[in-house]
Image (tube, rainbow, N blue to C red; front, side):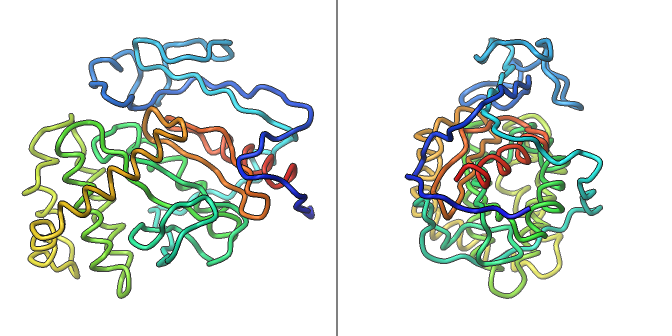
Length: 294
């Protein structure tokens, strides 16, 4: 199928016949605690609400209802490529600022090309259990179906809101990417994945500065002493950058993690903000919509 871009303004509302795509999902609400999400199954991410409900708000249990616009059919699920096991996404070193005004200079970019049709901006918190859930499911399908097919790239951004250790992890991620991006960016993924694999309740010892450094020491190729030095010397500057990343997400309507905005680079049109551990079909629908209605 050929996709033809038409003239559109940045952040334009997509036109055409629309069908509501409603899913009841759960995410880590900004400023919440895990106790507020006790009615959501951590294994499946399923909320307490009824599938197909017409609710569009976040209730006290942390259940989020996402409504998106759809202008065309999606590819049947049985034609989707299965994600690789284990997930090992390709990384590229970005530079400059995207058309969506996001700086790439010190942000990990999951991409198989420098010129994809679509940017996916992903805000996460290392202590958010729904971020961990997404990376164990939806992210793999995105990499297999859209990143490796050179349709999309994923820009990894920070949205620390679960406590002080969330900011510490985000700062360490900045330092580590700076250290390894030119020589071996997969080392960043090994550490990133290790942090999520060790995730427990927020603000416990697993997410302390010493534990985050120990994960790095256990990965061959990471210079842990240099990483520690960066944390001491550059933390203030990195925190300023991270706070700006988080604020940008808030400005875009992101209120929980993981949070996403999909941006079509030719038309400069965007999806609505997507939040929680979205299934791959949500991204599939939004990417289809943006490319066919640009």
